[in-house]
Length: 398
Image (tube, rainbow, N blue to C red):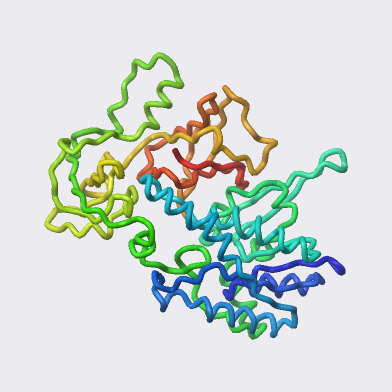
């Protein structure tokens, strides 16, 4: 690949370090860029957010590999596109996925455009996923986003909002490797990141105290925690007299509309907008035989509805809905027409095993009906659908 310039997003971790090394070995002209996207240290758990250390490690890796390196500040774009969006979603009682958004809005948009302006032919990251392509009639190219070879580290889900234009300019140098192989390569090359722990927390911010983070704009507001008994409603109680198949999908995807008098007050919270469906920690309510889980969040009435145990029927739904404007096809060749249905494997969160489901595209959007009821389907998160290891499309859960 002599003459081809690649700009690598060096994060200061082992994955991007090895990605840069492999590209250089393949003959690319490699440049390393570190993205500084956050300045407010007040909400970070400092021991787990060493951005300065990450920047320094990225620089040392670049020096070791003999490649140019610089830091770029994208904090303004990150705040506008990610942080402000997060605040707005939590205020509505929804749970955004900043990692998916960060890839769509920052790494593969702002960062990609900067790289192209610097004369790059490609950008590269240390994601555990793969890209393949097919050619029709010798000239028409279609790119495919494939799962990473390491099933325990596959990060294709986080890239579920990428499009063909972005994939065309992106390389994933470590997607065919196991994590253990990546660390071995880093160790053999004497890279400082070889034994470094994987980063956790918000994309480019690190591990944060979420309530402290959200309290920057969302003020605490005391409200009741209402426990809902198991027998109030069950995903097993499905009517059989629907007037159409679509009305059945609508019913299955609707969330339970709990009221305060449906259960018993068992405590208080400091703001319903700080919580998400399926959450267990942070409720500060004891004395129940089984742990309490959040079943529903009502930010208008400022009420949290909870239930005992991970098998509480209030946690389960058999279907979800995605608005028309939120349906995204990574591979548009497989795009469904309105009125069509297709079988796919779907996940609604990172690392969740793929679940069999049928996708139905209607004038009202996409309905995904699972073979088995799913726990904690959460509005604001992304559902991604796969076929034969390829991530075909995704959408924000309504």
